Length: 122
Image 1 (cartoon, helix red, strand yellow):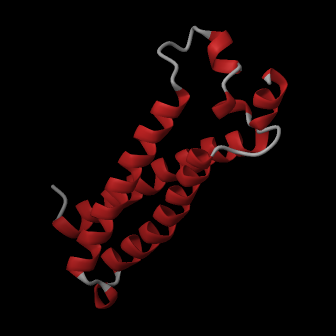
Image 2 (cartoon, one colour; image 1 turned 180 degrees about the vertical axis):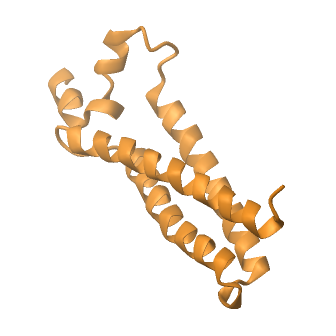
């Protein structure tokens, strides 16, 4: 059985891994965009970068107890949870695809492909 400090450190390490994965996927979307990105993609990348910085503090604070402020750690974790929830809802709503098998809708999406598709369709 892990102690509470070890459990918090293990949870932060998992959060760091998933944040890194989100950052990589969103970064790939940004890199493949033809002309510009949707603001929801930029917001998601902002949330991932902010979470990385916050998680670095949380991981260090769970090891070095002299810099740990328990209420600040709790509030920071809650803020990150809400921001990731908002980013996930916005990404799902903007994508608007009910099935990944609908390739026409998926690949012609302005959200995924950038502004070039929107200009080409006008």
